[in-house]
Image 1 (tube, rainbow, N blue to C red):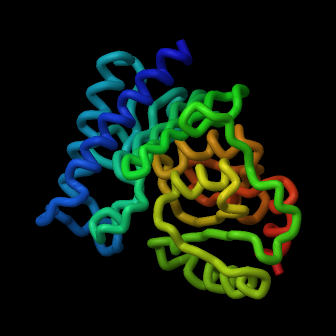
Image 2 (image 1 turned 60 degrees about the vertical axis):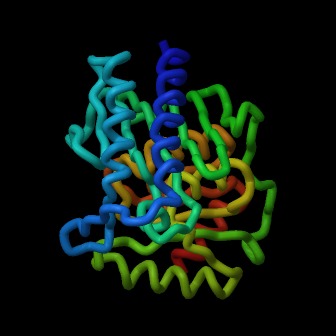
Length: 257
């Protein structure tokens, strides 16, 4: 059954990604502000979500969909699809071509299948539990870098103000060792860890649909996945640290100083 789920997820990611690509160069996007945060939603990611949901629910009507736009958003499903129809909305609406469609299939709080599609570069990342991670059909692995100094590290700024002081402190600590980047698409950042472009990535207060697809891809490529304090990663807590084994403990130590 897992192969048929993977196939459906890939088809759904292409469908959603083609919608994003179609509208990317167009003007007059309908942009709405969400609550008091700076999170954005466009009419495009709503359309993408609807098409993705249609594909997944038609083939697997008994599996709920947990997603950002107009779908079930309950905790701790025994099994579910997690869908982010446009991961990197802020980039998208500002015409910065770094965004993706992210889909994850989880059972009993464990990732089983992850699919992330970059519609601009036509990059398809995917993984099944225990079978490795792939980019456009080629197996990928994390960076073999062993020292933190000079590593390519990426983070993000949480929307909730509660952890702003913590991330500001951690950024200062990290920048004593290397330069730092904020790229704006959690799913792609995890995939770039998976294929060895990024040496380490951490962020706080993310949603389950932000993380569900990329986590397995990074893990199957050899990354260590924890929370930024070194504890077990929890999809619904939304705090993550992903890095190759040789970098993970060093980055963890640096962030704790």
